[in-house]
Image (cartoon, rainbow over all chains, first blue to last red; front, side, top):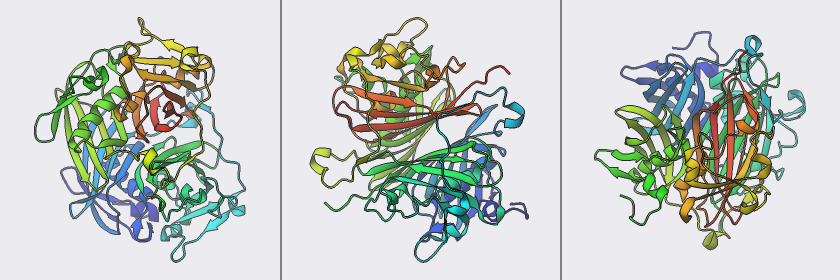
Length: 273
Length: 273
């Protein structure tokens, strides 16, 4: 059960054990796009069940394949632990409703990230990419939910788009912006799973003839525990071909440290011939 | 059973059904680094079992978590089909030996890629990245197996490194080169799973103090069926931090069409403090 003092996101991904590798939880209303729960939120919910089965270990690398849209309501999680190692636990989770699978997850979980303050001298560190240079959150474009768009989930996050990317018609498959949870709820490893899938699709800025680009598969690497404050996020796509496109995400915390990377493969409905 | 006319790679990933969602196969000798089978080869073998269970559908996006090193010898595959859709089948595979799991795979499989010749007018196409500009295969540096390095698997592939990256001390986490199977065996979707993990790690060129960077997780997107001839490959890493690094791969066929993308998360042993 969630801590009674937990924030809305922590409560929305809470799960409870139901015996024999099974957990129960609920797809909460409000974390959706047109009634279907956001893919990052669903991944966080499944990872929460996986983490419980892994003795509270935290997500390091998790992959979701999306099997059916998730409407709000109760769900069950069937969890298999494939390995409990000294450093990593590898876990599979099927999220289902009425025995119909909605999502299948595979992930490796660990005891947490190196504490940079105590261990920076010993860690190999190197970055070939910097956080995006962009105006501060208050100079960016705040996205508020509306009918029918932007979607309801924008009421759960405080998302500010880079002005150059906010038109969703820039002509470049690039979306940059700032993100935090509403009400000052801190973002942990599970919140990062939400963060990597909550921005508008790059397909919009690429001016593709799509209403949405449904995710087939999403993989996220949690690289660090974020510090407090805003997340600085960049999403790009390099290859749109053969009816599919990838979208890569990079997320830095407010101090400029990389905290997550993601890649998803999305369907691109073909334009009429 | 493999076609008697099949090449060495096709034979090395052959599996046979053993009833009730179970398949059997063999980690063939020679596809290894110091006795442990290459991760891309193991992924191809697991994907072959997944493909069989999916009625011969081809890998679209597959993820492997590596649980234990794979020495040559017989293995069993336990396969679960999570969904059989009109376009996609989602399948999980555990590869094990003597009931000890070596690898867990999750993947979505489909009926094959759009035939560009017949369908190019109807497909949305866009590329933000070009294949690497490099000298032809015969001007690149051929890698041959030796004791103890390069590893035995180099006897199975014909791998030619870009001269600038072949020293494995360039100072940049970048490895580019050409690849084909030996004996002219064509590369299919399964061969691409090998291709994305058979090059020397970028960590070598990044001059990291590591003997190897063991893969925790590898995800590959098969974006097209490659045409005949050489594959043109580029591997890069952007973030080395917190004891982990990612390695991204892009593979084009000889005609310059993107055929696969990959990302892996690898452990980077920390230097002594």
